[in-house]
Image 1: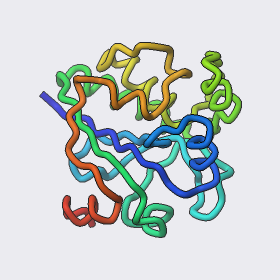
Image 2: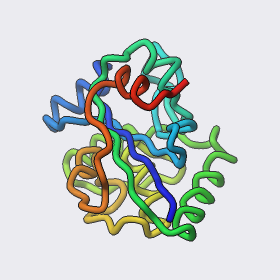
Image 3: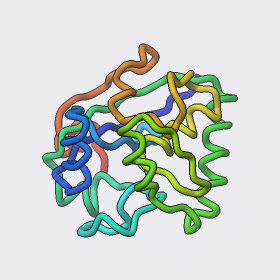
Length: 180
């Protein structure tokens, strides 16, 4: 068996505050990693520390950039155990996406429509939970209750298959896991 990690966060960024205002969800962002060290960790997110746009597929670091500057962000770390075949299928899809990383953009329209439960799939466009959901659904790791374009980070709190490893803030997560 192999392990995939999901990190849910809620920052004080404008986008996160807007999502929280609309949803009142505990978490407004999700990232995926195939490593216990959480490095590399991927999502569809801001490309630069200080500006929400441009955004796209990004390797997010917990020890530099946005998370370093915002280390008090609340977070929850989950893991799911999967077969080696499903793990490899998920990694292969991620690798394929990363090969064309520059072609992928942030699905702002999809994010807004998700709030209204209106599915809207755009080729080469993702918001964070749509990106993670696409990988997990494509590799048959989780049976999603709805289309990837309708999944929110908080929806992942409902999956019994996920095991919570940590709840707290980014700084303490980094310290407790010895991430460097």
